[in-house]
Length: 88
Figure 1 (cartoon, rainbow, N blue to C red):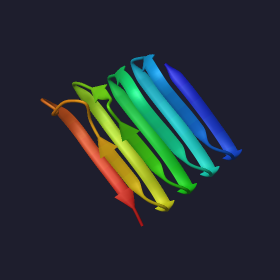
Figure 2: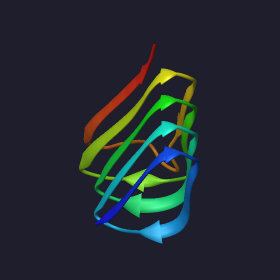
Figure 3: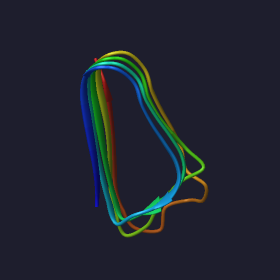
Figure 4: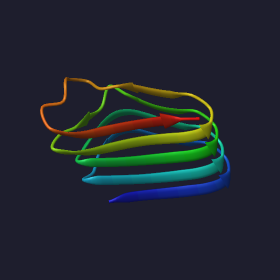
């Protein structure tokens, strides 16, 4: 399990394998690439969230921002699990 949180700052994670990733920031971007896992939860209040070239099989992906953009480009099509993308 990998957990990271900031009040004001970006979070970047790449080239990692972990069952669960939980990432939160109040004001900042979250950039994820080349990850393998089961569950991903990434939330920011003010900032962008991107997850590219990653595989989260048989689990859940939640990417959420109140003010910003969301990008999700998995490495391969999902065969099971749930994906929720939210931007207000």
